[in-house]
Amino acid sequence: MSIESWLYLILICLMGAASPGPSLIVILRHAVADGRSAGIYAAAGHGLGIFIYALVSAIGLSFILISFPKIFLFVQILGALFLLWIGFQILREVLSKKDLSNLGEYKAKSVGTTLNHFRDGFGIAILNPKILAFFSSLFSQFLSPEQSMSIHVLMAIIAGFIDVSVYVIIVFLVTLKSLLKLYKEKIFLLEVAFGLLLILLGFSIFVVNFNITNFG
Image 1 (cartoon, rainbow, N blue to C red):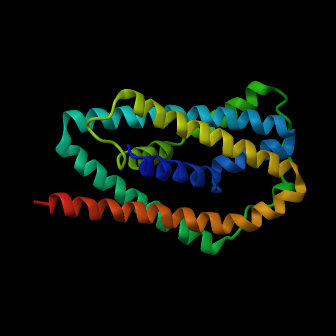
Image 2: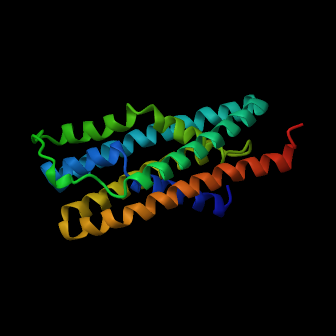
């Protein structure tokens, strides 16, 4: 992979992790209800789930690419369509809601143990098949036959590491109440940028495939 491809992949992972969704809400609620350490442990569990899904996606797609290159082309096109769909969905939703729910109103019962915080973070990731579909779509745009297994493992490690790092930073922000307001104000712009980035990536795949194959 080129440096540009790595940077593009890292940017999408960064923006994806920071965008609001069920995972972010669960982690922030742990942090608000049970303290900073609870949010950090939940973030670590979520990052492990992301790593597993990312690794499965990279290895599975690599097998298809090497064994069934023609099928991989269709997988890549379907992945591009899925990225386009996600991008447009994000833009549609963000225009109807510009910030996060008022987490300060959330009153949860303290689960009390590190294991439960970690478990909840891991569970919200590993039980969400949309994450597998997302990474399968995303990684399909960056794989090539000459790549080694170490590249695929590195892609998964980067995805998991970025996920944990971004959520830990957000947990620190939400536990510093003076910064929470700023985060909630800027999340609208982040979501718009993330949606547009996915749309751009999806369209670029169609352009590349039209130029290379002309579809026949």
